[in-house]
Amino acid sequence: MHRSPIQFCKTCAAPVAYRLPDDGDTRERAICTACHLVHYENPLNVVGTVPVWGDQVLLCKRNIEPRKGKWTLPAGFMELGETTEQGAARETREEAGAEFKVQDLFTVMSVPRVGQVHLYYLAQLSHDRFDPGHETQEARLFSEAEIPWNELAFRTVKETLEHYFADRASGQFKVHAFDIE
Ligand SMILES: [Zn+2]
Image (cartoon, rainbow, N blue to C red; front, side, top):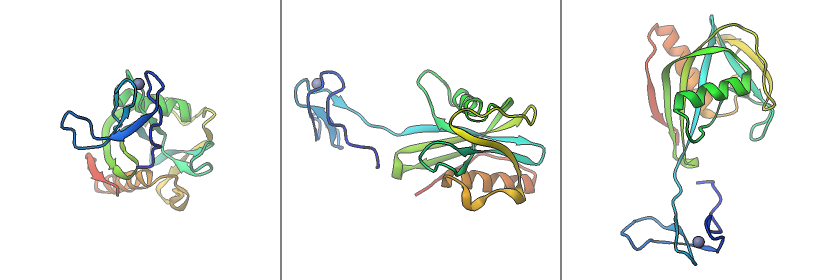
């Protein structure tokens, strides 16, 4: 897990110590040394879309770290109070300024190394004009032959695109759930 360890209590700001709670929990948790609050740390959801226009897919060139300058499908961390589908749509609007209709869930990928679960939905673009936000240098459509495979930002994006083109070739789209080590 790459997330930084918790140092201070989120309630009273006293230092925490990582130890086993007294309730039979089998994992060490960040426990406040003053008020004894147990801070649970759990995986985060990353939600996004595969936006399609004819035989082309929309990719965004990242304008922020990590992987600035690399290409990605529009995606980002889910926010509290929204559904996975709403989050995927919001990220697609924010990063690409695209208009689209969200369709079926397409990939579900556990990435335990970074404590994340990534979910991508298929999306049908309404037109081919984009207005990317500050997180994106450029948003453009790629045919399968044009996909910059060696310039993709994340393995989850590469795997999702590979499944998309394989399913399109077979004429049958289905949900792909798998793990990325
Ligand atoms: Zn505390």
